[in-house]
Image (cartoon, rainbow, N blue to C red; front, side, top):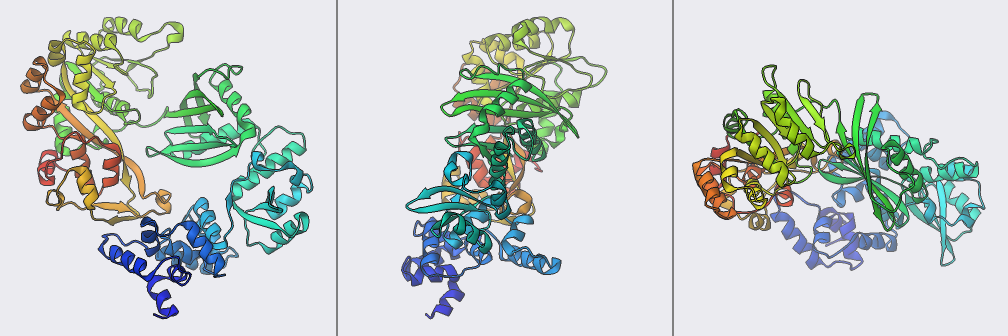
Length: 625
């Protein structure tokens, strides 16, 4: 096979790997056979990487040794990070706008790829390392030789000497003028490195302010501006949490987006004390205390409204790790029909649980699974001027009109115990307890239900049956549990497939085995997966969907509780006689409808029993959305 034929068949990079002996014809043919069996097409390079036959370093070394000039766009396509259509679209933008921007800059500017990926691929193309320029990484003897103004003009920063050469971080390591200036300043022996532009400029600005005797800042603002910019970026990205994490030489900031942590930005380690102090002032914590864990609350005003931030300071070996949970004050409550329940489940939930005049309704799941939002949706659905609704929460997360909400504050002795003792004297129809956390709050919920009140609360358990078992393990009498609890709703939040880049996919044998299914059980499903695009930040997911397990206590389940049956036995009774659809089964229905992926099911949902065939679950659930 000629070299041109190999390029045409396998692509330029695989052809180079073959020519250099990094992979054999046998390896490539094997990878080809695997690719032909895949439901979703994969680049040949990806398959070779999955087979552990090559790495990014292998590709980088091969390109450098062969002195090949592989274009950045071709490299992105062959590595599977960019669709050929997207590359062509970028070329069209370049042509139509008559811009001076190069194709890589267009790909980043128009969100075909993110800057971090671009830097990594540029590193592979040029053979240069990727670096993160921080104050801690800089040899100040090198930077003292040159003005910060000159470094900013040419977008580079010397980092350190290594083996007689100077490592220099460049935003654009193909800028020949910048390379020439760096060689003139630091000698011919420089090692160019690829750096993120924003990180490079941030560090240069901090150095400039230090030289001028100004306070450490980013974007010409004080640390107040840094904190505000982080919070505003989190709000803009619809993050649920902000993680500010001290590392050995940098401050890492990550946002929890759609339930998964995503990198936002790194800051120099030098600003850590000022950053921590600013947040402590905002949440009224002790700014002098850095040896103990602390917490607090911030009400942050911005142009579109106000956000409630719950702040936690956690002492680590590298300093204080800070986590901020975002609770939007003016956020519109979800309609009960919009939380993601299937048609039959929502009808049953309303008729046999929410509309019941008395009894305990529990919503269970881990932290961040949407329990509180579901409880608020229930209260919002039944709220009207004819009934009295009262709450005890720590803290109040969403303000509801017409509801008497109490925010627990142990600092002034406004405790759960004190509040729950007084709550029944307020003549309520519906009581909402933020969380059942101990025997006292569980007892109070049961007693309130026995006296004719409707009680809604949340619980931390893995599934609906676990909610019942945990109540019993709190030494709540079985007759109290069986006579007062009307339903337990377990839930999780899974990431939704991005509709802009969704593509059909087949379930692999490994996934079937992990699910506990046979192929015949799910043959009718239309399973999808997002390829990744600018709409979803290249993740393949956008937004989240609820997955639910509703246990309505009928006579058989109540008898099982009185007889102190095991969780396995109660679950079997629920499935066979009480219409229970497990979390995994509800997730499988949503995956089969192209709403979420099998990967999300396996990542988030407990497999406590094998799911039933898809057509059986669909009949029990009705339509999903």
